[in-house]
Amino acid sequence: MPNITLEVRDDGVAIVTLNRPDAMNALSATLRAELADAMTTIRNDDSVRAVVLTGAGDRAFTAGLDLKELSDAPNLGAANDQDPRSNPCKAIESCGKPVIGAVNGVAITGGLEVALACTMLIVSTNARFADTHALVGIMPGWGLSQKLQRIIGVARAKEMSFSGRFVDAQTAYDWGLVNRVVAPEQLLSEACALAAQIASVERDFLQQYEALMDEGYNMTFNAALAHEVAVSTPFNRNVTPQSIAQRREGVMQRGRKQV
Image (cartoon, rainbow, N blue to C red; front, side, top):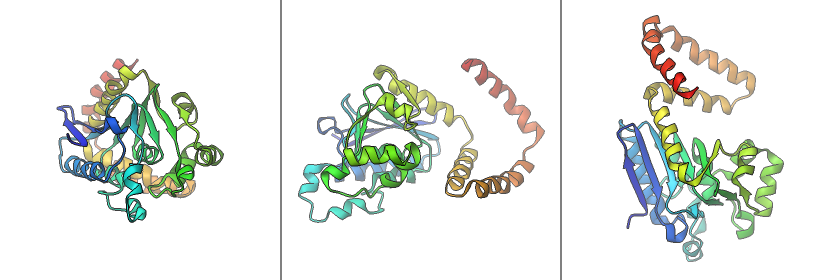
């Protein structure tokens, strides 16, 4: 049985599933390598414009690194390198397309890092999040120590990371960790519907817009504003009234459906 399943739909959406439900979708070396292969396939498939990443079963998105496998590993640091075949967060980032995390159950430690690597998160009411790095005695190496505090604040991040306590779906939403909480039976359909909306945007424009956001996030606010002007001014000079008119009806129709 494959550790990763990949479904490419005809609406520009790919669904990637972490497929070790009996092991709470733990991130074994084989699963991480297969995830990297799936993301490479997605990166090279121009028909795919958005991705949904979820876990098999109803217990776990992923429980993080396979601790049984780690206990037998001669070099724990190998799991923290920057190779996408070892580092699942790098694998997710390498696909070059928006990734919606559809978190169906627990996302623990390395699993929380995988969730944080996604572009946005829609979660089931069954979702719970925890960072147990301190309890296990391993330092995070996939970005958690820096990303989490930037999303939910330093004090809340330290509370999670130093205590190892779980945060439920509603608290994660209240803290700004996730975009939306839905019923378990609605999770995949909601995530795929959002992915399909994103996939309807022109690919090159979407990549440039995301780059503009990501680049600005790493700057001071004033520098980011100046960067936006520097990027948008030459880009918008090439936008014609005709192209806006062509898109106007589609924008209005989408707006009517969402009212």
